[in-house]
Image (cartoon, rainbow, N blue to C red; front, side, top):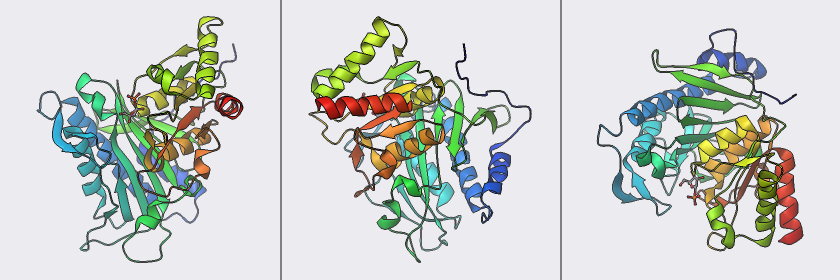
Length: 341
Ligand code: P6P
């Protein structure tokens, strides 16, 4: 059949720490700080996963009653995930500055703590509106080296093009909890073993399969889309109905829809439309890290006109259209936009 399958079995027990240390051989200048930073993010993921598993019992489902910078209802678990990531990283001396989807401005390192050379951008719990329905959600993160020379990091450190990324990844809280990351040398997935509280390597060197399985888009917005996206989607629908070569899946949780696309092949897209002319998804801490991951796995990510990683954000919460998955499918979407508008 020749269908590419990601290698799911490994012949040794590899924790995140061991894997990141082994990856360090690609970075002779590495001092181990990035390893420790990635490990801190994985720890945050374990803590969030633990809270998630008992959310329905611990009265931490539901809304806080607040709205965030996006104008969205802040879920209790949103707030908890945001605070967990911040307090695990604010004192380590590894970061110059942080930025979160939940906060308008950058998150400075408190004066009493040292600063370091890395910058952490994160969406603490994407898809959180789905939590109350037990639908999978995720944490997304992007790591850069600071560009400012000294002192507390600034917004300038957070508004870098994706080509500057040092590392990116996500934690998907689904049927199992997985930590997926890249430092520029392939994409690697770890599954949390709750019995020992450790992420173990389960998906080494993930490559998006050459043969696509699903397309993923919210077809409820069809009438709001440009003619090019409508025609592109009708083209995909014909592949589903006539050839049955692909099918449609849409969860409405970015990390879940992305993770399935990465492992199964296909395309996820969230187009701009007449009600969201800039698109809905955030560039800096959603589209860019996922674009880095998909390129490292042999796929592509576009805003409909060119690579996401070539775009330099001009504001922290800037939105973007996103087309991500098999390169051929992303290019085809760009072609339909170019030809039909
Ligand atoms: P829609 C969740 O609210 C989110 O930000 C992403 O996780 C997801 O991909 C998207 O919005 C879903 O949006 O408009 O299809 O409900």
